[in-house]
Image 1 (cartoon, helix red, strand yellow):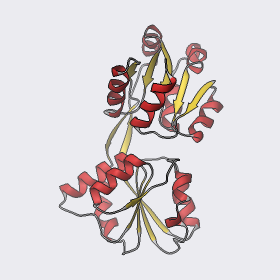
Image 2 (cartoon, rainbow, N blue to C red; image 1 turned 120 degrees about the horizontal axis):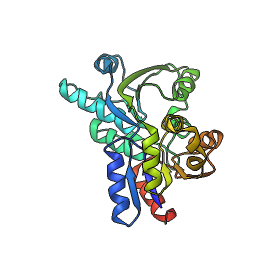
Image 3 (spheres, one colour; image 1 turned 60 degrees about the vertical axis):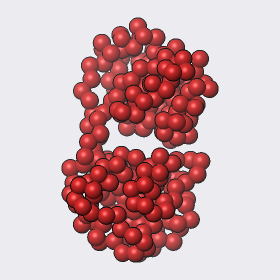
Image 4 (cartoon, helix red, strand yellow; image 1 turned 90 degrees about the horizontal axis):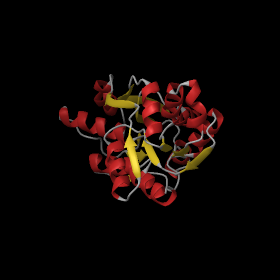
Length: 249
């Protein structure tokens, strides 16, 4: 069995190397590239509008990475006396390192629903919230916090750029390489990947063992037609590696 890792570089290559080291055959095929966001130049102005006690929420590691790099390039600093919150341990660690302040994140589940259950966000009325994210994505955090009467804004610090892939030769290659398992780390990537597959190859593809980070993505996969789905509980490489090591033979 060979595992196809579809997350962006360099994470896909790092996970492939980890799996190969323990004898699990894996290959990388990113579906998108991550680049600096088109409107990141608004970040400093948006930060300056925040007051002590307001909130900065980072929804991904890339959101933090590009924001931190931009602030450094402009000689700007992260604001003090903010509530810093992140989705997931990797994102929280990156944000804490960048801003040098405490960062809250949900334990166990690393998704928007778990983040919204944090006590820090229970009474947020009239506070400003700046969400660092990529282009597009879910609107749940924005909608929920707006419903709690917070003043919410986005800064798209990075953008996802889909790769133009010719799936017909890729599928033939994957079948020759005995791909029987897939790692897909978001609903958007799952939909894009599924849409690439030629109709005559969908039955084979749907029978591959699919590993996803959350129940939400698993539900999406089931709706699309995937038959063998495992939920890892996190999109972080270390969690994926540990889970695959125990569940792929």
